[in-house]
Image 1 (cartoon, helix red, strand yellow):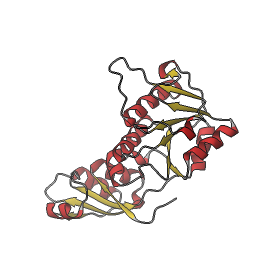
Image 2 (cartoon, one colour):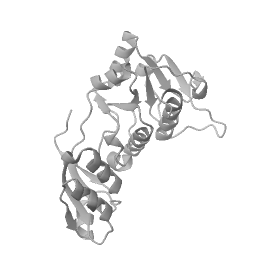
Image 3 (spheres, helix red, strand yellow):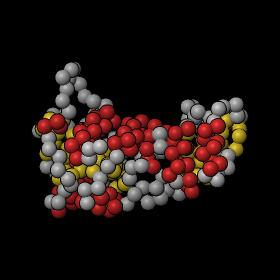
Amino acid sequence: MKETRRIKLYGKNPVIERVKTAPQTIKKVYLQKGTDLSGIVRKLKTAGLDFVSVDKKWFKDNCAQRHTQGVMAEVESFEYTPYELILADCLRGKAVPVFLDGITDPQNLGSIIRSLACLGSFSIVLPEHDSAQINETVLRVSSGGENYVKIAKVPNIAKVIREIKEKGKIKIIGAETNGANIITQMKFVLPFVIVIGSEGKGIRPGVKKCLDTSVSLPMRGAILSYNASIATTLFCYEVVRQVFPC
């Protein structure tokens, strides 16, 4: 599903990664005068993309983000992947979907996307409501990671998880503070999905009752809770170590 409006990318990495992966989505690029941007200028010219040089005041007046590194691009708004394609990849053992059940902080969502892009072999499923969506903050924090991770948006995560449960072909694993298993003692076998809940409330009851099992991260220090993006990264790292070794 494709949003209608344009969106702005801020910073060198987000723009460079977009130039590398989807230059056709870039509509305008603005570069700040007096900033060493020779590297990105070369990439833009190689891709056949024009840019406009503007002064520092223009950036201050026209950019919502403060940390732009002197680079801003207007691009087509983010295009979500159809959920059916993500499910098909899961059934083939090509990628593990990560269902984010109530991650409302754009910074956390951006960090999760960036981490999963680095790890590879993961996709993301977001609910339409009570969740952060792909916006300018998320894209800045993900630092171009959105170009490498398929992301779907569904009306109701609980309904989708119930459908997976009813078909019985895919295991549903929840990440919880007090899970039934420690993740390092868990044997992951494809196909499966991972469910990550919100930092405050965890996995919602309607989703939780569909879990086949739950896992937690070992904590030898203070018994607190991990930040959602850190927890997701650690869970997915262990999955990669077991299932998709380098």
